[in-house]
Length: 79
Image (cartoon, rainbow, N blue to C red; front, side, top):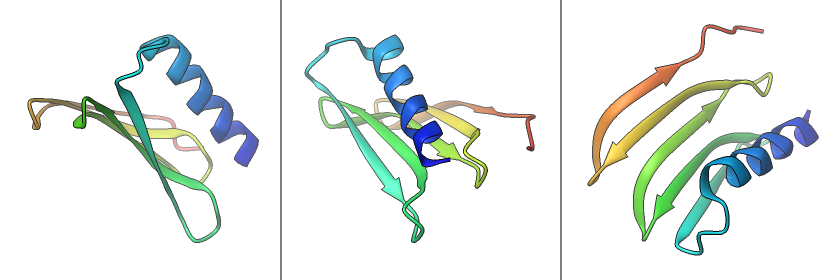
């Protein structure tokens, strides 16, 4: 399951950010070493927060602009 989560992280990094050196990722792990969330920052400003379910699926993505929440996407997949 951990490999699945890391694969998602790599795919998101390639698709959305390419080789931009000013984009940083903060990976938040649970006690079981699973990824709970990923915060994406550009120039040290939060742009997205991605939360994962216990099964490894993306539960929600929150989008920010100038540190203000501008939208949220939630998944309907509850596997």
